[in-house]
Amino acid sequence: MAPFEVLVKPMDLAYGLAEVLKVKMPKLCHGCDGLIFTSLHAPYEPGTTMDILKWKPPQENTIDFKLHLNFPPDLEADPSGETPDWKSKPRFQLLQHVSGDEHEFYDWLDMDDEEWNEWKIKSEQLDDRIVECSWHPPSPEGENVSTWHITRVRDDKTTANHKTTVSKIMESIRNGVMEEELIALVPEIRAAWKSEKRESYRGRIHKNQQPRRYPPNVKGLGGPGPPMRKGGMPNLKRR
Image 1 (cartoon, rainbow, N blue to C red):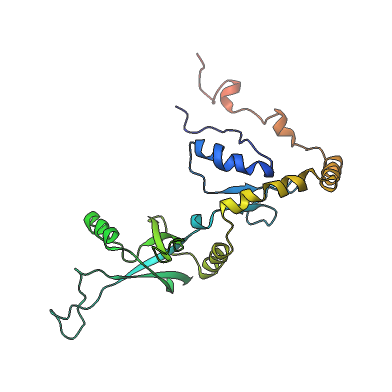
Image 2: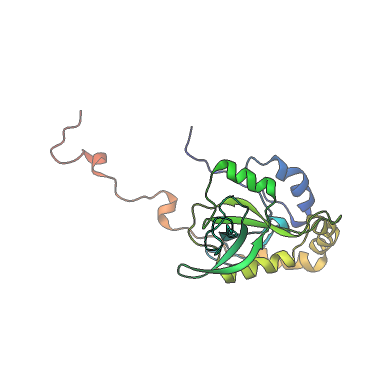
C-alpha cells in the first residue's frame, strides 16, 4: 500500500451547498467540519487571506484552553483549609494564553458527575493539560445551560490558544450562521450567480486571465544525472 495518495477534490458551485451538506459530506471517508468558499480569481496564498471564506456551524468552533482543577479544601483532615480534598469533585477553570508560559483565567467548564466519574475511571490526569473545548448553547427546551465541553485532550500542545485567538473565535461563535440559515440562502445565492452582472464579471475575469507560465524544469528538461547514470562512481565496475 502506498504511504499516501493525491486525489483531485471535486468542487461545487456555491448554490449547490445543500447537496454538499446533506448528501456528499456524510459519504466522505474523512472528517469534515464545514465548507470553504473559494474566490473565482484570487490565487492560493500561504498564511491568512481574506479572499477565502470558511464556514463552520457554531458548535464546531473550538478553542484550546489549559485546564486547571480547583479542589475544595478537606476541612475534616485539615481545619485550616490548606489541604485539598482530592476525592471530591473539583471546579474546572479554563485558562487562555497570554505570553511565554503565562496563562490567565477565562471561564469555567461545567462537567456533570457522570463525565467526571468517567475521567476518574480512566485515571488520567487532567490538571494543567491542554483541552480542546466546544461551546454548547442551552437547548430550546431549556433543559440544559450553556457551557463548555471537552472535545479532546491536546497532548501535542503545551500552551492554550492566545487570548487574541480566543477573542476572534468567540466572535465567530456569537455571530455564527446555522446550517439551516445557510441552506435558506441558496435561492438568493443562485439568483446572484445567474444574474447578468455576475455573468459579465466572470466573462471579464476569464478574458483577462493570463496563461500559466511554467519554469523549464517542469517540462521534463531535468538537470544532470547522478554518476550511476554515466558509468557509476569512480573505480566502480558495472556488471
